[in-house]
Structures are given as C-alpha cells and as structure tokens.
Image (tube, rainbow, N blue to C red; front, side):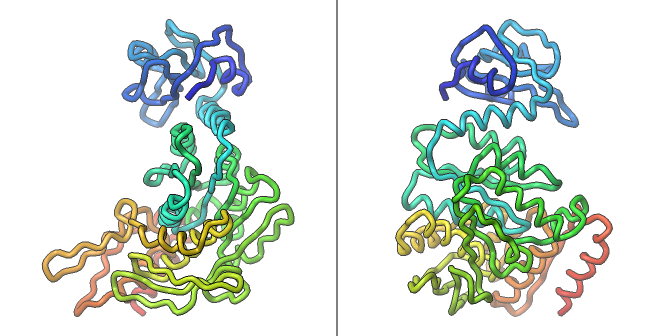
Length: 377
C-alpha cells in the first residue's frame, strides 16, 4: 500500500497537515505494522479508542478516531470510524483497474465465491474473501489486501438489513455482479422475499453501467429483474430461456457431472461435490468465466478443482460411516438442500442432525415446521 495521509483525509472529508505515507491499515493492535494507519472501531464489547497508544507503540503512524484520544501521531477525526474504514478501502480499491466480481444471495454465497475463485484463478492471480468475512468490516479488510500481484478479485457481500449491500457495493465497485438466489434468510429484518430482493439488488448501485449482472433464472424473484443499464445474463436448469444451463446431471455420491449449454456450445463439467444446489453455484461461476472471455475448457478445469470452505459439505469417512459436515448459519433453503444431498448419498441408514435457524422473526415457527415436513417427506 502507498497512500498519503492527506489523500486519506480528503477521502474522509477532513484535513491534516501531515503528508506521511501510510503502508497498511489495521483495526487490530495485534496486527499493527510500522507505518500503519490505526482505525478505532467500536463493538458491543470493545472500543479500540482505548488502545491508541498501544497501537502507536507498535508502529502506527496515524490514527482515525471518533473522539479525542491520547496520541503522539496525527489523528484524523471522523463521525464514524466504521464508515471511514469503508471509505479508505474504497479509495484504495480505486487504485486497481482489475476485474472485481461482487456476489450476494440468500444461500450459496460462499460456495459460489469459492467456485468463481477457482474459475478466475485459471486466468488471473485472484484475491478472494476469506471464509465468510462478507460484512462492513470483513469486506474492506479484504480489499485492503490488494496489491500489484493480484489481477482479479471475487468479493462476497452479506447483509441482514436494507442499506448494507449498498454500502458494500459502493466500496468494492464490482465490474461483474452475481446474485445466487432470493430465499428467506434475514426475513425478520426485511419483511418478505420482495424486501429481500430489493436489498440484494442494491448491488447494482456500485456496478458500472454496461457491466454484466449474472442472475439465477430459475428463481421466481430474480427472473423479474429488469435493468436496462446492465447486461443481465441468466443461468439455470429448469428455465430453457437461460443463456447458461445445465443438462444431463448425474452424481456418483462424491462427484456431480453435467453438461453446460451456453449459446450454441456445450461443455462437460465435473465438480467434486454433490447436490443440485452446487450445480447452480457452478453455473454462476461458469457464467462469470464466459463473461470474462475465458475458454470453456479452462472454466471446467477450474470448477474441477473446487474445495469446500470451512465446514460446508465436507465429506469424511470414519470406518464404514460417512459423515457430512455442513455446519454454518442455516436457512430453510439450505436445510432443504442439505436433506436433498443426504438423499442422494448411498447408505443403509441416513441420519440428519439439524440445528435451529435464526433471524426468521414472526415466520420462524412456520418455516421451522416447513423444514420438518420436508424432512418427513
């Protein structure tokens, strides 16, 4: 990183007399480097303003704070350090003229992100969101990892309320947008699937006009999206009107093979995982590759190298028992997809261990019941 403090101050709408060079940005005193800018974030159980001198002692060259703090280095005073962190990341992202894929959706974001990463990595040195660091702290942290070695990035965007995707996309400024689906995750805060659609479509606010937007054409909400300023490309399985489709889907219990049909071309693909939901994720990633002008065989090669992130559908053998680890913030859609996957696996006896689902608000009882009925069926 090579930003001057005056450059950062201008982006934050403040002033400084110092023009020192900032070489990194940190919100954690444990990760301070010589020449760092220390941004004082506040959480429910901590306030980084209390650790400014600790950061300075470790090499911080300047500080961004919301209130007066003891410091022997320049301090940029702002109304919100959380907003400032996004603004700094946006300033830095603008230094890079590279493809940036921004993706969101109710379920499948992290798997789709990993698949897009594998596809793009066949052509580019690609930066990706690690784990599920997809919020207003994780996203700027990811963007600030960019350097001249990277030639592309795939950035995951999560949300639980209106306005969050707007802030994230205006920070990341994607050159391609992907929306995986519209489910019922976070319906407690967004009221309805129409509300969720509206929130997810905020991703267009940071997308340059004329850019590609890749949407699930089998999703009843996404298929209604009309954006004249963007090149919308649909992927799917059931909807024959989608530009990118999967046919001849087959699974052997460990891998899934299918044929991708796009335009007047066909490409066989095999992904090392099972479940129809993963085919949709692979189609989204395939479409990203096509929109980036990649060769379809290279795209298929990238998808064949997919590895699950965290405990997302990791299959482990323990003696004669197969254990599928699928442990993360669940929703009705992902619970049903997991049950479908279990049904596809070979086994004399099958056991599903299901946890509860959060952020469903007044819909919670009915949605838990619907999952129970689905499991029963």
